[in-house]
Image (cartoon, helix red, strand yellow):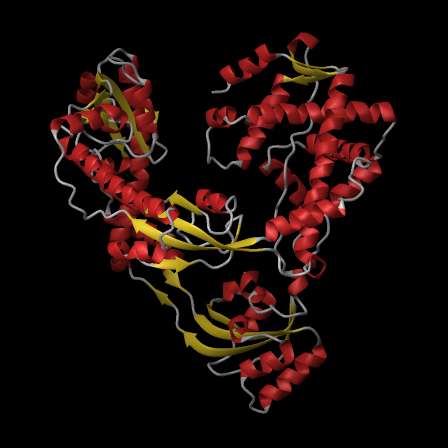
Length: 628
């Protein structure tokens, strides 16, 4: 309801109240470090133990940050589990060191830090809000105690590491790195594209056999499974459900509000911060000034922020709705006190309310009621099918008893495609079916499963065709296409190499381009990180050019062809570093961060030696095995 009013308060007076919070809350996985006997600890740090559940919980919290972009198995292969474990070890190391140094963080300090966190503040009052605090913790899989412990540990860590900051970055190093980064180069380049229309003739059988052998994986057929499936859908049951006229009319009466469009009005509003400005605005409007002009002059609102569009009474707060809906088309309200200040409204159009007749919605009601009953019927049918299967009936016998269809598919791959590569029609929706299909052994029935889209299925694997390389005759056209593509690429490569060789013999690049109908271009100055580089300059070619002297050549490959380049000039940083304050400061900060990081790494290694870190690799491997 208040959203419509908020659209009208985009002024300097209210902007500070309506900024949306960005929940950039990072979880570092604190709490629950200890537990179990020492032999059950995944790692020990001095007298502290890190338990298996602590590592698993921290790993799962990290996985939530990936938002499903990678699987747990992939994360472990990428070293995420090791990073999580080492992070917990580092936390324990700093806690051990803090205890030895006598570092203490008071409860009051922890509370103050939590209450200062913007993610936990109410968006309007800007004050700490306990409900928001608990919601954020819940979304990140943390208990309140875990978060409090984490804040305390982070504060202790900050105090322990506070003195390990590089005092200053050496000026000579900063200046040299700055100039190295700012250096630009210019090259003449000639692009030799791969001509996909080039006639390269026809391959002989030996060439085809060679490609077919070398690229077996590319020409392999996937594993296929033959399966029988009972597939239950609510939509299939809906057509069998009849709904009487009396019940339809009763439903119409009960749901009449859904078919009623209330009276609406197109409304403009301006919101004023105080009574004086509201009075001034009302005076100007009474004198005939345009509503949008007054809103801009007095309330600093543009046209987009004053237009509420077509609204109903329910869209406005009660204290404003009655007054606004008494206005006729073209009328303007007196200043009205509202939740965000003083409001002035103008009605630009009145839209009469309507009610759909029973006949207009009869078909819709029939469909809704049938759909609701179909869901119930589906649940009962699925239970009956499960009972039949549990009693030892085969899929064929169960389908006959339930009077449902048993579908048979001769070949389904892991992407749900047939042998021709087309999607198999009629399969249960979603990924659950294919997962179950490829987890069920040959000759076995699966459990009755739900797709998550109002469907149930049970299947039997009747045959498995292992993945195998398709015979050359079966994929001959594909192999020929690969051969042709390779030959076209080879021709372009040979052309580029010939140009490069002649160029190195002293011939001008422009002269070498002419016989091939190509054009030489001069690049704009570009940096070694690729800033300013033309698209034809790949990262590898740029790196080569930054290792060359003026007049020397290089060649690179892109997705569409090959590029021959001659380094024409080296432009050292032209401006005074002291005048390029932003870039110079960024370089200096980068050097400082690098130096500080090196110091902390050395300190961390020293702490590991002093506090005796031990990792039980057997238990770590067990965590992997138990969390697929």
